[in-house]
Image 1 (cartoon, each protein chain N blue to C red):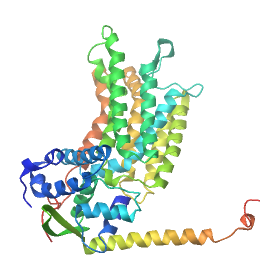
Image 2 (image 1 turned 45 degrees about the vertical axis):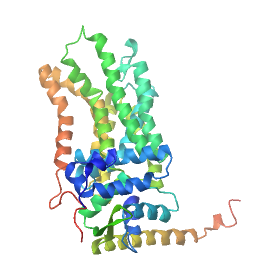
Image 3 (image 1 turned 90 degrees about the vertical axis):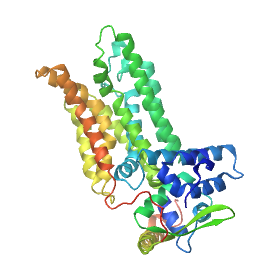
Image 4 (image 1 turned 90 degrees about the horizontal axis):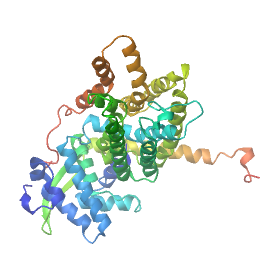
Length: 316
Length: 110
């Protein structure tokens, strides 16, 4: 079914050329039927959906690949864990100090107090959107929240540039900023058709958020309690093996890794510095979990063996 | 099996359908609760094609519009049957438990 691509609607023209030539006419026909007589919000949603699928094809994040499947399993956990962590930063238990918090200097979780509150509340909104059954909105809110954290982190850094070296910026973003971007990346990578839209699945999310809140609030206290988050993450990973989907433990790992990075990067960096490692070496070591996650994501995203390209090209 | 997959396979169980026909059928099956967007539909169809759960049966032009008709493969029919059996057994168990009246619950909460 070859196509004169210049006649296709704009969202359909965004598909990669090979896919567009094989499937463009049919996708355009379905899109035209779906928007015929529809109101503006529905037409915008249709255009956004086709655009999203086209960009997903270009980014090689289609739902037959393994990494998007992992991301789809991780996405509900991401919104719950992110909300729980943010709540633990904003509504602190007595004796609980979120990482990178200096109360006397007006610094909360590596940001100004105002920045921490804005971004913290923003990170609670994807959970609310998912509970309302609005996954597309949750993804947008997650990206907004992650970008807001990076902007707030940079806003915190810029006035201090005189006293900090520019290469400190990388290590600062490793603690706060890049982990949240990883969460946003997982949300974006999760294909809509693989997300759990069941009511039962949604009802478990507030529980997961509450568990994260308690684990973080306790884990950010002095002494042995500091291990609570790590033990909780290991337990969650182990429980992942009881799930009928075999990729679920990997999804758990991806979802909780940003929380572990936020919580443990500073203590680990401090420990390594006291052990005599140079500044650059400590930064390199603290970057390893994120680098490992990116490498793992790329490896998981390799095309499945035996898969043809692009699909829907041949008649049975 | 996630809901979009279940709905697509169910919509194809009785006869081959084209993209927009699937969107309409899915809306009907779910009693208007689920309106699948075009982008979501083709993402799912691509995956189901690569998993060989569905296949393209024929292509034709209807009223000036290109249509590709999708159909269930034997593997897709088996997957749908297995999922239907799983749902049936869960529903049967729920029904059974609802009809087991515990003494404390007889006659309401009082």
